[in-house]
Image 1 (cartoon, rainbow, N blue to C red):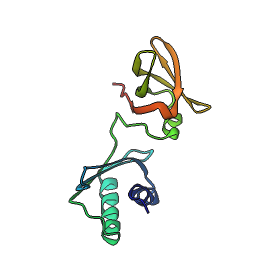
Image 2 (tube, rainbow, N blue to C red):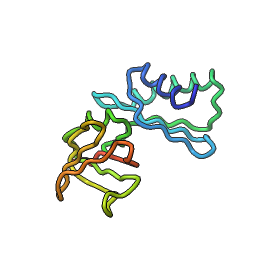
Image 3 (tube, rainbow, N blue to C red):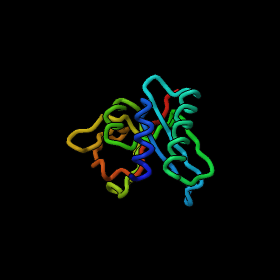
Length: 142
């Protein structure tokens, strides 16, 4: 079983969503970002951390440090479902290849239609294929 699927299985089994998984180049540091609709607490992070530690022992995963946390207010959007779930939110999107001469867009996420992510920007509406998105994050409103 691949490592990301293993982590996702543990996290989702505890009732959380795996938002992101980061590993240092040699796998010595593992960062796991979790979310749940009600918001992530310190106890949630401890619960997931303890369970992952046990699973990593059984699966002989070699690492030095495990960090489990919330993705924060500027949560990354990784899956197609994220773009549907956070429709109406302010987002920042970076594309793999520019449209015209622009790779970075900021605007209100309108959702996904037929595999195209739609965004309302100051310059008008834009849409691009989900596969062309390199990076996307929520932009918190204060």
